[in-house]
Length: 199
Image 1 (cartoon, rainbow, N blue to C red):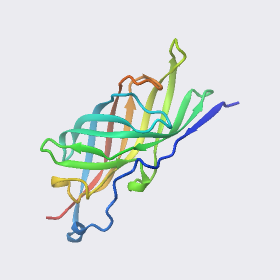
Image 2: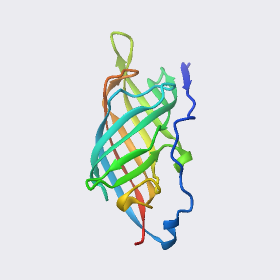
Image 3: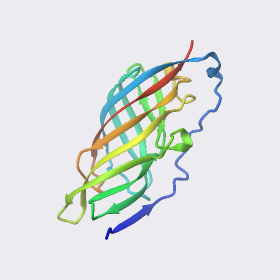
Image 4: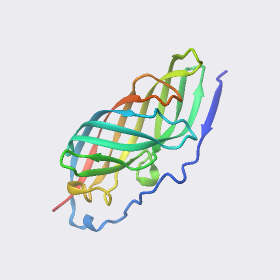
């Protein structure tokens, strides 16, 4: 018999950016270009459990059109289901605020991830593999996340102003203690396409 428990948390109040439909800059056509990204980062206060609200995380990496970049945003864990028989926890997550990538020249590529309200086809999903238990009884886990990052054209700046598109990001953590506020390290990579307005 599978023993499961489910945590849920409301998503209201964390989404503040408005997607602009039918932008004026789209009238002149666009050029679609491939986009690839990778990086390593930290969730400095650990990763939030359902009901704990948004937790910050940042990344440094390399990407097409961005070059060397730094990114910052927040994450919200919406739901989690614990399967002790299989030793995994699965659930849904997404951005608690825009995730903003700043390129080497200062241009901003503003995105939301895992949020259908902001253009993602599906909510983000994760799997935590349970690796062990601390002396205090806390779970030691390793995470894998998948989410679609969707560009917010009206909020981006410089050469990304008016850019549309998205990419699927795959992220993986180092082992961490579930529920801890210790920093959690992760890495990610993604690939998709961006459409740049014709000048």
